[in-house]
Amino acid sequence: MPLPTPLPLPDHETVSTAAAGWIEERLVRQPNSLLCLATGGTPMRAYERLAQHARSNPALLAQARILKLDEWGGIPLDRPATCESYLQESLIRPLGLGSRYVGFASQPTDPKQECARIASWLAAEGPIDLCILGLGLNGHLGFNEPADSLQPHAHIATLTPESLSHAMIAAEPVRPTYGLTLGMADLLQSREILLMVTGTSKREPLRRLLDGRISPSFPASFLWLHPRVTLLVDQAALA
Ligand code: GLP
Image 1: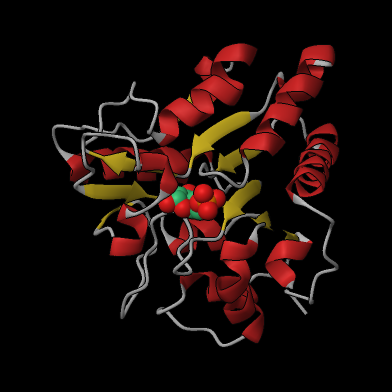
Image 2: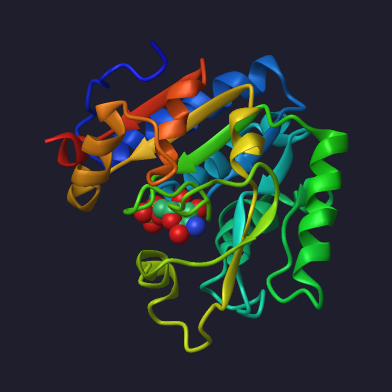
C-alpha cells in the first residue's frame, strides 16, 4: 500500500530531523542523486539541518544535483518571498551548490519558453531521485493546483486564491501573476517521494489525502499511484 496511515511524530522539529535523516541516508547510497525541493514553511527546517550536517560532512552534498520544484511568477528573483531565496539561503549559497542547482526564473521574458527549458533539462538529467514535497492547503503539490485535469510536465500555473494567500508571499508587495511548476508526471516519475505534513492547518488536507480517493480536484491524491512515498506527519496534523 503506497500511503499507509503514518505514525505521527511529536512535532515539526522531529519531522524535520527525520526528513533530513531520510534524505541523508539516500545521499550516502547515491551521492549524485537528483533532488527536487519544495519550499514553503514545512521543509525549511529539514533543509537547515541537512546544511548543518553537510558543513561537518562535505561529501554529503558534494555530488548531488538540486532542482527547484516551483516558483512564483512575476516576483523579482532576489525578493525574500521567492522559492529561489528560500533555497538559496538555506542550502545553495551556504554550501556553494550553485553549479549543480537548476530552477525556474521568476520573471522570464517568455514563461512558456522557461518551462520548456526546465522540461528539457529534466528530460536529459532526470528522473528525479528524491522528491521532497509539502502539502498545499488545497491539496496542491508544487503549483499543480486543483483542476479538472492536471499537467504532466513543467508548466505555467494559474494560482488559486489559496495559493495567493500563502504565508510566503504575505509580506511581499509585488503580487505573483502566475506560478511555474514541475508537472504531476515529473513528480510521479521520481524514484522516491517524501511528503512532509505538519501543523493544525494541515489537518483537513491530510485527512482528505488519507481518504485515498484519487482526483485532480486534490492533486496530492495522485501520490496513491506511486509505489515509494514516505509520509512524515506530526501529531498536530494527524489529530
Ligand atoms: C506553496 C509552494 C509549495 C509548498 C506548498 C506548501 O505554495 N508552492 O511548493 O510545498 O505551498 O507550503 P507550506 O509548507 O508553507 O504549507
